[in-house]
Amino acid sequence: MNENEGDAVMLTQPFKQALPILETIINHGYEAYFVGGCVRDLILERDIHDIDIATSASPYEIQQIFEKVIPVGIEHGTVIVRHHHESYEVTTFRIDGKYSDQRHPDAVEFVRDIHEDLKRRDFTMNALAIDIHGRVIDLFKGSEDINQKMIRTVGNSYDRLKEDPLRIIRALRFSSQLGFNIAKDTLQSMQDLRNSIQTLATERILSEFEKLIKGTYINSAFQYLKNLKIDQSLPIFKEYPALIGLLREDVQPFRSFAEFITLFHQLDGSVSIHTWVKSWKCSNKTKHEAIALNEALIYFRYHGLDTYLLYHLPQDLDQSFLNVLDRLFLDHQVTNDVIKTIRSTIVIESKRDLLINGNDLIKMYPDLKKGKWIQDLLQRMEKAVVLNEVRNTKYELKEWIKCNPPVIN
Ligand code: ATP
Ligand code: MG
Image (cartoon, rainbow, N blue to C red; front, side, top):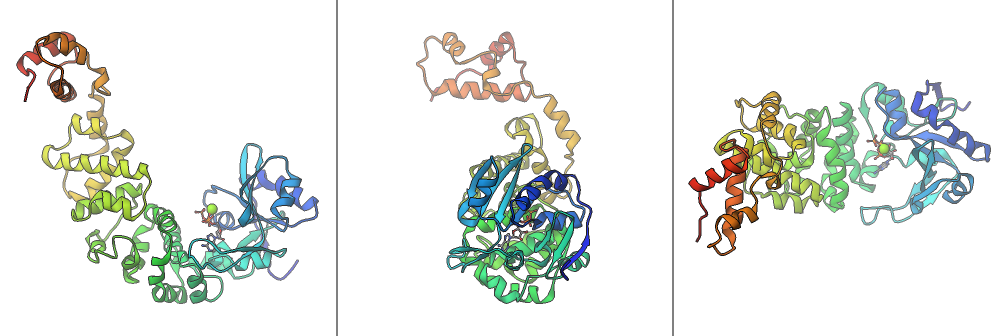
């Protein structure tokens, strides 16, 4: 055993399930290890979501060894090996070239030594490997840092953060997810290099930031973020220096980035949802969720919570709606149960469920030229039905229409 191989750890079921892949690679004369986040999470006894494997075999050699290989990122040395209906990322030991565009390393170089591969990784806690016997390879005191709950760069913090400034956001993201502190010199370099975040591709920042705001320990991560003034290098926040200060001190985890930008738009209306979405290069999903949440909040300010609000709000946004309310209106009466109860009284799912449709209206008013009045009337009817002002039957809707006739402009 070499001096860097520490105590063995007990492999849990997800690792045992992946062992045959390691064994197969080793039987072909190469090295293979579990590596990165899954090792950290195993030591922390956290749920494992994906198991990453590092190997001395080249992607081409892995393709020769296994039947089902998906070449997802060959140029970075990564292929996916399918085994018992699970996917495993198998990445060839590599060192990264320069990150001259701050997006991807210009080139990667495959190496045959796990030590070289561990050295290129961002934090000591992420630079651990485990062999098939459960022995931990720990070149940078990663286990000790995990025990001390400490985020520390591998090697010189200034050089490593300069090489890829995304690591600054990643440090915050891990502190938010794990509740770890950031080592003093790493913190200092984060401060010194915070401006270089602006050279990163927004998509890379967003992907880490989304994880950051969902973390259990977001509060302490945001303390770091504010103290280091990292917000001053983030889209929107850098143009509105006072924005971050609008958040309450005890910030709670967000469910999504949509919830996050909706809250900020509600706190300061001068940045529109559209601007948020554009500056942060959000997905369409985030955009639509933020618009729906924001409309619900605007309606709420005027009318409070009712069936019509919930009818328009996709149900999977209920919790986000409640979260934003909690953060905005200190004493509102809305709870999950209230939302559920009101939802259960909504009688239609869409206009299509109305028992009088456009054709019926045309027949009812044969003298009227077809036009916008049909849409308008359907919409008013829809609202009346959703608000339980009229029952959704042909007879009652007809009676209602007599009192609420078409409006022709
Ligand atoms: P998660 O459990 O959230 O996926 P993770 O540690 O697996 O966390 P990933 O972003 O999936 O994080 O990255 C996998 C591994 O690759 C990391 O553990 C780290 O060793 C390495 N890594 C990822 N991004 C970087 C980076 N920007 N610089 C250096 N190493 C990185
Ligand atoms: Mg991962």
